[in-house]
Image 1 (spheres, rainbow, N blue to C red):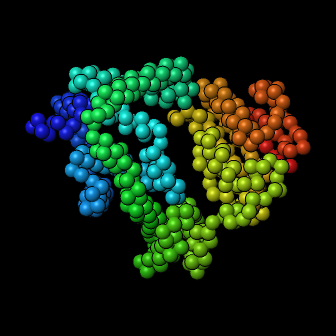
Image 2 (image 1 turned 135 degrees about the vertical axis):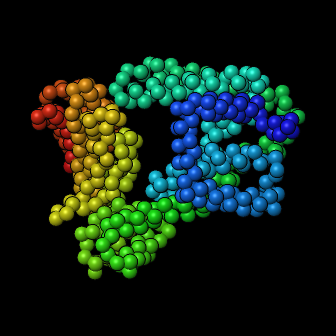
Image 3 (image 1 turned 60 degrees about the horizontal axis):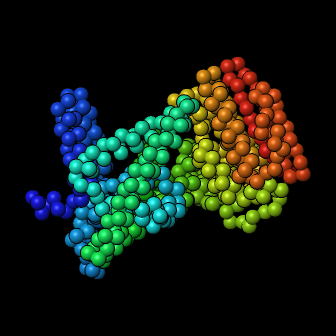
Amino acid sequence: MSAILSVFSNRELAFLIWLVILLVYFLIKNRWRYHLKRIIISAFTLKLVVIYTTLAIYASIIVILLYLLNIWGIFLLKDTVVWLIFSALGTAFTLNRIKDFGYFTDLIKSNIAVTAIVQFMINLYSFSLITELIALPVVAFITALSVYSEYYTENGKDYKKTHSCLNKLLIIIGLVYLGFALYKTIIEFNTTNWNDVSQQFLLPLILTILFIPYYWGLTLYMNYEIMFVAINVIFRDKDKYEKCKIKFYILYYGHLNLKRINRIKHKIAFLAYQDAANYKDYFKKAAQAPLYTKSSITNKMKIKLFNNIGGCCKALSDLQLGEFSEWKKLDGLNEFYSITNYYLIKKDGLSNLVLSLQGEELYIHKLELSLSILSSEERNYAISKFQESVLNIVRILSLSLPDDIYNFAKKNDCNYSDDIFSLSIKTEILGNMESFTLAIKSK
C-alpha cells in the first residue's frame, strides 16, 4: 500500500482524498445519488464507450512504441494516465468545434508556452499533505467565486472589482506555489534526477503530437456522421440507393480536408432545394474555397484591412461577438457578405449584437454593427457594450476619428466622413425595440 501511495505527490493525494469525500457525500444524500447515477449513465453511453476504448487502444500502441524506442519508462505511467484523462479525453470532447488544422498547431504551442512551463514547475514539488488538504478546497473555492463573478460581470452586474480582487488573490497564491517550487529546485538541485524530470516535462508534448492522427480521424468521423444523419432526415422519403449516392458525393468532395468538409456541412440544409441531377455539381461547388483565398490581396479599398477578407474576419473575431460565416454571394445579387451569429448581451437575455461585412468577391466595402435592445433592464449595459465594440472596431481597422465622435449622444444620430472612409451611427425605435447601427464604408 505504501509503495502505491509513494507514486503520488501530496497534492495528488489531497485531490484523491477530497474526491473520495465528495463521492461518499453524494452517495449518502438521496438527491445527489440520483444525479450521480444519471451522470454515470450519460458518461457511459455506447458512443462515448467507443471513444474511451479507441483512445485507450491508440494510447497503448503509442506507449509500446515509445517504450521500444527507450523514450518511455514505467515511472511515466502515472503522468501518462493523468494526461489521457485530463488532456486527451478533454480534447476529444471539443473536436466537433475544429474548423481546420490550425487547432492542432495551437494545441502543440500550448504545451511549450511559458504558462505550461510554470504549471509544470509548480506541480513538480508539493507542500505537506496537511497543507495540501487545506489549500486545495480554499483555492477551488476562490476559483469558483472568480468564475461566478466573471459570469455575472458579462451579464451586466457590477462584479468587476470583486472579479479583479479574486484574480489578484489567485495570482498571489500562484506566486507562492511557484516560489516554493523554485526554492525546492535550488536546495534539491544535486539530488534530483533531471533526466526523469525532463522526460516528464516532454511527455505531454510528445503525446500531443503523436495523438494528432487520432484526433484528426475522430474529427472526420464526427463531421461525416453529422452530415450523414442530416441526409437521412432530409431525404427520409428517398430510397437507400439515392441516399448512398449523396453520401458518396460528400465523401468524394470532402475527403480528408476539414475546411472542405465544413463548407459542405454549412450548406447541407440547402440540398433539399436542389434537383437530383445537380447533387454532384452542388457538392463540388460547396467544397471549393472562396476565390479570395486563392487570389492576391487587392488595393481597391482605402481601409487596408477591407482588402484582406480572411485577415479582416480574423482580426474582428477578437471582439468575441461570434464566428463569421463564410464569405458568400447574396442570391440574385452581385454582392457578397459574411455575418456573425447573434451575440446575446446577457446570456439569458433578449438584447443582441450582430456584426456583418459586405462587399465584392475579393474585398469588403462596408461593415455594420447592429444592436437590438428588447429589454429596458438591459439597455444601459447593452449601450455600453455597443460603444465598447465601436471603439474596438475603430482600433482594429486603424481609423482616425475626432475625440468627440466617441461620446455620441444616445438619442442622436452621428455622422463622420473623410478621404478614407465614412462612419455613421443611427438610432431607431420600432415598437418595444430600440436599435443602434454602426456603419463604416471604405472609399
